[in-house]
Amino acid sequence: MAVKLTREDLFRPQGISNVNDKNKNIYVVIAKPTRVCNADCSYCSSPPLEEMGENWEPEWNFEKFKIYFDKVFPYMVHGATWIWHGGEPMLMGVDFYKKTYEYAKEKMLEAEKQIFFSMQSNMLGYNEKWKEVFFEIFGGSLSSSFDPDEKNRTIKGNAQNYSRVFKRALDKMMDDGFMPMVIGTYKEDTAHMMLDMYNWSLNRGERSFPLRFNYCVPIGREAGELGDLISPETYADNLVRVYNQWIEDAPNFTITPLDQMLKKAIGQDGEGHCPWMKSCGGKFINIEPNGEVYNCSEFSDLNSEYCFGNLNINSMEDILTSEQIKLIKKRTAKLPLSCMTCEHFSECEGGCARDSVLFDNGLYGKFYYCQSWKMVYARIKESVLLGQADKILEKMNVNIEQAKYFIKTNLNNHFSEIEIDWADFNKNGLNSKFGFAENNKNKQLFYDEKGRNKNIDYDKNENIFLKEEENKKIKINRKLSKIKVVAV
Image (cartoon, rainbow, N blue to C red; front, side, top):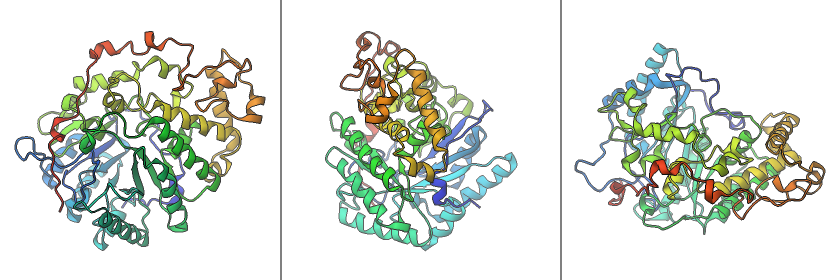
């Protein structure tokens, strides 16, 4: 039986530490048993496929799960997570998850290794029969989807129906003792509603729920859009706005990515959090309904050029040593100069490789939302050092003085060639929203409009590894360009 997730668990260090077996290095498996969905959200990144011919991705059954699980499980580390995703995974039915869990449990006993199960679902189909499954198998490790503008998430084109069914399901889940994370996806014109979602959860008191704020990307049903759907500055401004309220209120719920970023900044987290791993290649894998394996669900939404192989054809040895996985692993050492010289690099680790590719910066190029992470990490570190985050750190059971020492020591080490004026900082805070460099005693200006060090010639040195990719421009996966809504 799974251990039930508690509110205290939300604030504890997470991730995985002390992985010593090089032959078992998968931290997270994202498993998509189906692309079919009972909703038809306008910006779905993995919608159902229109073609029902050779490219159609069939739903799994129990036998197919056993084949895939037997191949993958030996390579998963102790404490790894298997996340059911979709499509809508609840459409597979209660019996599917009971059978798959019993089979997985036997394998865990044989190997003396534990893995944890989680589910990302819209939860629209939640009812009494799912209560036992969500407790016994998933331990309450669940996440769902809702946006406060109540326009883009729909059931058969009707946003009001989605909102009504979702809110009813959420209340039923809370009645049954669950606490699903509610994920919202935001665009330029809805980013200000992040605070609305925060206040909705806050005002529910003991029935509050954890939150996650994602940026919307031009992929899947949004693939025809040009450029970003929310600017890095807008995304950061609203994350910081919510963060300031969160550390002041210190409520009984967390906000991702802010909670993970805070834990990372004070050295209180293990590995395994997307997108904060420059070495994510092969430590996360995504399995599509047809058995194709990618680095993550985000890469699976791009062109199949980054497919590692297929579990119906290839062994895991071949998949984990494929040319595609080797390319992604090289990002660890081939990040842009502005990443490797950044004061936030040890926390950000270069950001998301998929988004670098998506926005035409190449696999070894700049993470598109770099500016966002700079602004958020700068504010987090400032708040810890000035004592403004004390209440939330206490809730995390963190030694506040050690957290301050950790951040300050890292900053002093990074800025060894300049001297930070800590007296001025303690009195006035940051002089720049991007970081601490401009708090130097000489009052020298360092940051350009995107937060890069203006004293480095990035045009000459920034993307020295991109020649290996021959400046490839990755096109959005064409199999997602012809889609239909499958509402059941």
